Length: 94
Image (cartoon, rainbow, N blue to C red; front, side, top):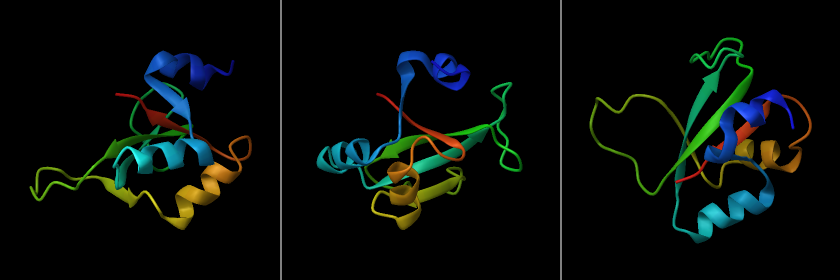
């Protein structure tokens, strides 16, 4: 098991096409994208891995700043199609 997967433990699973399909069937429409360094600090410039947090709808509040991507986005499909290439991408559970 790679260190990123150990760091995420049971709280996250690798992003795959199957994972995306499951999220969509559960009614999720978006994910919040967070980049993290090796030290588990938010890092969008040179992240070690991405952690996606599924959302059923976007909040309208301005305090909810972040990077969001639709569940059907081409970027997510490309990341999910090649889970063992490039930067690692995980989906938060629960």
